Image (cartoon, rainbow, N blue to C red; front, side, top):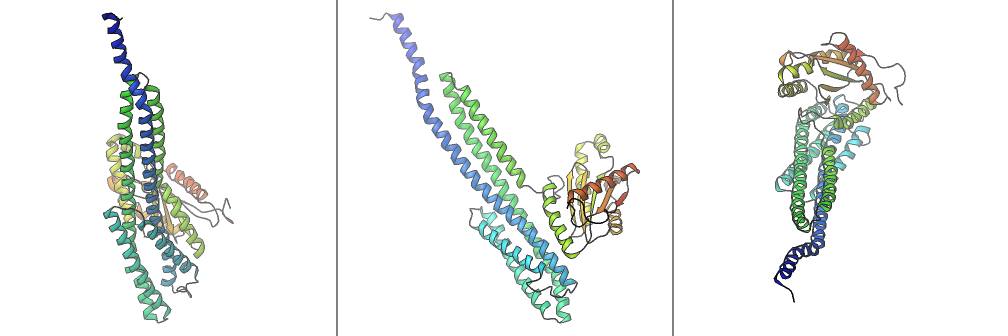
Amino acid sequence: MFDKSDKGIILKTIMVAAPILICMGLLPVLSFYIEKLEENGRSEIVDYISIAQAAMAVKFDAADLNGWQTGYAFDIIRHVDGAAGNDAVSRAEFLRSASNFRRDIHVLRTMPLAGDQRNLLDSVQQDFDSFMALDAQIIAMYRSGAPAARDKASNLVMGEEIQIFNHISQNTNALAVSITLDLMKKVAQSNSYGIVARWMMLVMWIIASAMGILLVRLLHKWLSQMRGLMQKLESLAGTDELTQLPNRRTWDIQIEMMLAAAKRYRQPIAVALFDLDHFKQFNDSHGHPEGDRLLREVSILIKSRMRQSDLFARFGGEEFVLALMDCDLPQAMTRIDSLRRNLPDNQTFSVGVTLWAEGERIHNTLARADKALYQAKDGGRDRVVGVEPPAGKGEGR
């Protein structure tokens, strides 16, 4: 019925059509498999994001607890009447923060953690229990009314209690970093599974001559998901990678706590903007690695000369911001002058400093400090220029 030529054409048609039909038949199955893989990957990543968010909650709880502990500790050191009472403002807020910290540790403990992470969490829990036990002793000594007991309470507040809390802060930071890194690994692992599956689809669509459009659609979908996940990871980070100082996001959180404490205790708070002089020229002359080194060394040196109650952060580039608690303008200018001495590579700073006016928004204070910074630059750099806040009520109330 068919000659050899016809049979050859039919055979070739079958040989070409068969793989195409097989690919087209397997494509829905493979698509379903990939969708399930993506769904499972998204579910796991969402779970890891929840764990990372819980770890960050514990980290920020530690910062909040430290802020309120500092508040009532000041009251104890200054022998303020009623400082040790649970109904005192700072003491009550400290107990509320401690309750939040205990609650969020419990939440994190219920989540799946790696062995080293659980060890860190156990260490945080033990330090916190020791901290609260010591705190109970301090309060009992202070409530006794005896001068010697009160002096001992003050020494414990400024000594052993701070040491324990520093250890808590270090471990909560390490725990948050470890969990965030695990999240990034999980994202990369999930992405690698998706890449393998897509290569299988690519081969099938090449055989079927119709793979390109679907591949572009799925790849665009995954890239969009990856961008979203990376943005979430970036939002979890609160430390400048180069200098290890607080970044702008952490500054925004911690400065509000400092302003609340300053308002509560009627204490002045100075805000200063730092700018490394001629940093661009240094970068151009020595190269970016040397510029990065200079930024790190300057950051470490200035941080080492600050009080624990001060807040020093990097805003970006060569610009830094500093908040000084319980410090008027003359004191702030004197202290900042001391911070600028003997910097690496004979580097100098120009600084603009002002006081926060009660009730004003912090961005208005920063704008005033920025104007003072420009006055320092226009005046020849390597100097501190102070600007008093406006008289009367704060701006932007």
